[in-house]
Amino acid sequence: MRPSHQLSGCYIDLVFIIHTAVTFPMFLILETLLLTVAKDGTVRMGVPPNHHQDNYPARALVLGKLENFSHVLCSPEGELFCVRGEDLYRGPMMSHKDVDWFSTAKRVGKCDWNKFKNLFFTPCGELCGITNNGEFYKGPQPDNENSSWMYGQATKIGAKGWDLCEAVTCDQSGDLYVVTKDDKLVQAKPPTRAQDYEEWLKTSTERGGSGWLRLCHFMSFTPGQRDPLWCVDKEDGNIYRGSIPEDGTYVDKAEHLGFGYHGFGFLAFTEDKTIIDVIKCDLQHEPWGPRYSNPRVIEDRIYDNRYSSSPLKHSFTFDATLTEFGSFSNDHGFIFAAGADKFGSEMSNLLMNHEAVRRILLSKNGNWSSRETNENKVRFSSSYEVEVPPRKAIQVEASVMKGDLAVQYRATVRTLYGFIKEIRGSWNVSIYNKLTIRQVDYSGQ
Image 1 (cartoon, rainbow, N blue to C red):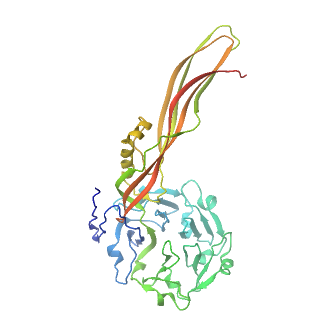
Image 2 (image 1 turned 180 degrees about the horizontal axis):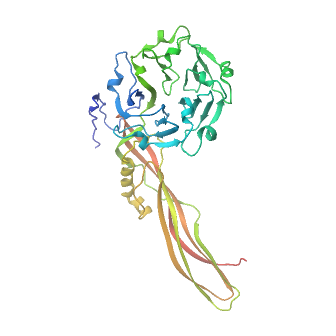
């Protein structure tokens, strides 16, 4: 019988959070969360406000502090990206308020990132950036600090003038929304070539009357939806949620959901995809064993005694080291919090205590990280006495078999905000075994 689990209220920096009690296997549905960074660097995350008296700053989780940064943004996958100086960092959402996030994040860009006025993600996860001199770039999420994103990975889709945008965002379909200098909100497909801003404006449609310049402190659609649009007034800090009106002004028809939000230097929507605890893991079915490919030759030697009338004796000796790889798939879209790798530890124990897996892996290293590709060095050595008759030539070959094993798993996890979620994935490992030494006649030159 599976026990029920009660999530109790907890105090974090005088913030009281009540989590709903659930009984497995029922699971809470992940909600869109609002991430904010105050001007003193305090980072909060919580459910967006739903009423003008809803006190988001008081009830949101305090995740820690970010200092000396110029841009903060969240990817659709739930990762955090920050620009500090000329550098770009990415990593899991902050989960330990006493730990400097930059010390746990990965630097993925070493220069040029201080040149951007705007940075944002498209719904499909591509990174977009508008430079201070008006160029517009779009490309994959950076992952290598030694590769230039702007000049090596991204495509320039805007040639000049894009720094005139007062605010820019995307809806779920990928359409671009821009607030212009003359207080208009315009919508159009994003440029696909190095198009000037003024040229792009001619293809756009004006939406929702005027009054948009005041709403540029924060402007974003609800993730995964084309509507509604959220805005924060940069003068009084009022936060609004509503559809873009066909006539009249947005503020007159939108819901007023609070005030003082201009006190946050950065706001962004995100989803709670950060795993902080593992409740249960199990394998979905019995591993059937690895699938082996063609043998891999690790030592090959020819003994040519065709021009001798005496036997040839020799010792065929070899010593080779190969690298095996193992990793956990992340098709479920969740990421693991920085710190102790509890998921990797739980899964390693589960796998190494499984008789079939243990039999396949023999004495392999049983500590598998869930955050990176694991490497295991395996050594093969032997000595084989060779005797070649007169007028003969032989070839001696040592080979091993490479096997690929995939084990499906299911895990119940707790996310950063306290939601319970079931994830599925696979543990994939390549192994070498079945050392074979064979001797065959040789007739080559």
